Length: 579
Image (cartoon, rainbow, N blue to C red; front, side):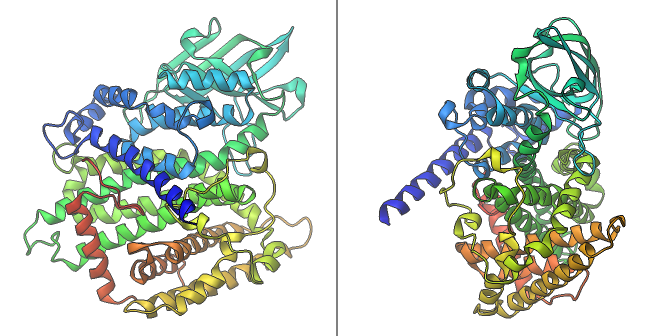
């Protein structure tokens, strides 16, 4: 046992040291002498480009190694760790996180899962040498219908001719390798096929870069379209089998939805940190100062929402390893719910800042930048709609899964909820598209609710009441799902199903919070934050409000201010930043 514990501690320590090294090299955002400080990132944003000094630093750090599996020479072994490392980048500039990092990872995921040995090795060599990638995924629509792709590849001799347009692709002009999905009519009416191509600069005839598309957020990202006109591909460019593009994308989505959204919490962290600095700078008689109950509540609510989001992101990223069949639904919940919560959080914080929420330079300019960047990280309404459809599909099976969930269910265990537990199996891509045979997250609720009722301390009563309210919501959800699936054959699905998707997502977030509370340590093992988190969730469910003691707000406000003074992150990890 001691050996196992020591090995776990050593693994976590190595992760923390890696993040600390990146944070130290990036430096203090508020230091005017730091070439990677806030003023420089804001100036680069105003010029609609990534900060060159930041890109050079990430080259030196070898950030691309975070995207390459260990067996191929990189550092990728756990998705939750990948998200933690990238939060350091997103905390400074979401455009840098997307343009330098996430865009390459989105493409590489498909190669790790379905590429040949040679394709995997070549892709690893490209990334480890500082190369970049991009992926023209099929455009998702509700139901994950891949028929609306604008690219077509027709057989021609021993290869293919690629035609069509992809209207918007991040980093298209700079990438060294490109993954595209194209309709292949000869393989079937609905068939999609994935191809691994060189970047546009080395692609040869028949590839045209379209003009840059300006965006309101992530301005530093160069978003352009690509047009293919009779572009010749040899058969060696196939990624996976002909006609197998749909399953390839389906296997990638649980991974990319969970990790990409989790990384974005770094951007939301900056919005909260900037607001705390603003409140600290105001005199006690100001409505924006910490003497204002409205300001204190806004800061605590934002901190609580970040913890809720991180609990759900943690479960979703770790589920890809531990619960691959269930990860499709959990990653869709993250992709669907977190952008909504974070957008509301930023709006509430903007009320504290008042007119300074619109500043584009100066001490509070990063807030406006975060407010513009966060919606762009969600990758648009199509991704949200597709994620909600995945949840609805799962809801139609909830009564079928209900027997497992309502009886004593197998406990998913500490590994799903412990932020520091390194004991995760490798990702099994072939299982990511298989139908779930249970709902372990909701199945964990009866036991965690029982423990919440039995908690002791000042906030135990509030935690127990909030946990009871969540359990009631779960019971009502199952009853509504049973009525939903009992509709007559042939009758269209009721719009009510989409409201049930909202409720399922929130209940899943509550279950994640209770799981983290049960298995956490330090602040995370205390009832105060869990009671506040569940109260926020139950409030969003528009049922009975759960009362939390005023001292709960003061308790978490102290944590918010302590983390600000100590320069620690506002997520589950309280990571030292900028040191």
